[in-house]
Amino acid sequence: MRWKFILISTLIFSIEILAQPKTSQISSSPGAIARLGFAARGMAMGNAMTSIATGSVNSYYNPALNPFVDDNLIQLSYSFLALDRKLNFVQLSKTFIQYRRDSYGNKTDEIYSKAGVTFGLINSGVDNIDGRDNSGLQTKTYSTSENLFFLSVGINPSEKLSIGVTAKYYHYSLFDRMTSTAVGFDLGFIYKIFDNLTLGGFIGDINSKYRWDSTPLYAEEGNNFYDYFPVLKRIGLSYLLPKDLGIVAMDFETTNFGTKIFRAGTEINLIEFFKIRAGIDRFNIDNSDMIPKISFGFGLNHTLINKFFELNYAFVTEPYAPSNQHIISIGVRL
Image (cartoon, rainbow, N blue to C red; front, side):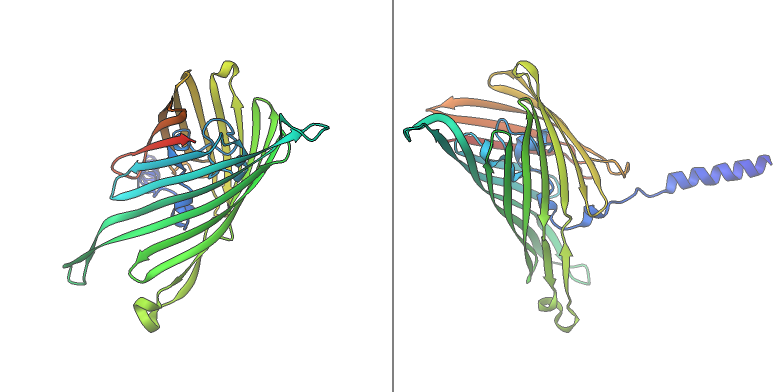
């Protein structure tokens, strides 16, 4: 009996050691460029931005946030990534305000409704890919490039409710004569439960899919097929801390690829022009083998020549890369 016990214990222990981590289908699905986050503020807060309608809001996370953009906003971001990867962001936002009129038809200072429009671009890719022939000899260096262009519109028909829609266009250059495009849509809403508590909802990448055609490379042996994007469904809550101390937020996201992701983030106002941020992203409730991303960052802002400038930085851990991410963003309100 003793030897049987030792044998069974050894077998169970060996299985635990040799067991492979549970993989997630979404990790190899298309459209990853739209699931990484946008700019330093959001990524420093764990991308838990679905319902955050204060500060430098970003309609990438929810098109219903467009009416909450202050003035006209320009944001530029650059990322430092390992493995010859690149990830860059550009966003231009503009708001439109309609004021109430008095009984004589004169415009008052009371806001009747607000609307906003945002145009954005995300650029990603990998450079310095070593190409070799069947004999192992180097041929030439390759690169890939994926771009996402989006146009987002949102309107605030009442003080509590905001709705929005985003049209997205993807272009992927994978290899010589291997390119594809995709068109998709996002929908979102924002609802102010209380002055300090906001609810947000989002559905992303509706109808998005790549169509690949390898016949230009392989002739008769080529093939045509569709590569469907995961449809993202997300709900979020954000709470403004008392005495203008900052904000805390959390998101919960599900997809048709079987993932259930939890995100959380916070932003603390240390002084008027300096904020610190922290967050957790990609906490998969159904898969403990999927390592979450931890993030930190800060934000600086200053008014110069009647223009509002801000500088944001984010540090994001990358569990499967040799080094972590560093994202720098610059914003200007015109």
